[in-house]
Length: 103
Image 1 (cartoon, one colour):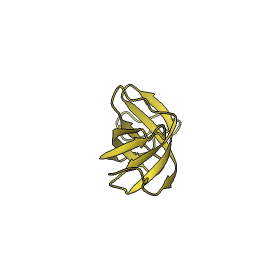
Image 2 (spheres, one colour; image 1 turned 90 degrees about the horizontal axis):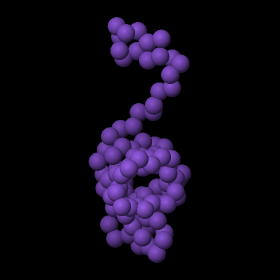
Image 3 (spheres, rainbow, N blue to C red; image 1 turned 120 degrees about the vertical axis):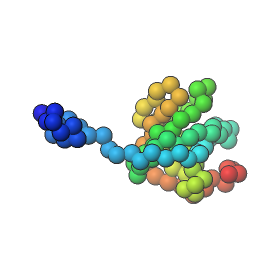
Image 4 (cartoon, rainbow, N blue to C red; image 1 turned 180 degrees about the horizontal axis):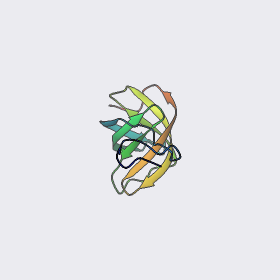
């Protein structure tokens, strides 16, 4: 049980969420469907994945490439969760900058 006098102390029986550094990076979801690209904002990113903010009308498949120009790399992504205009993705590897992307 957590000590109410010390709010920073965590209950050892409660799972802790991995620390995800906040970032604000531009990115592009490349779906591979007729060279379809959807602009997005990377809200937080860590070694295993990221949270993306997308336009509400965007249709994103469960697997896609996420190209982040600032990183100079494309991440192979799998969607782990979806909530209105945000999705959480898990990185399953990287690829060089896609040739069809102009950014």
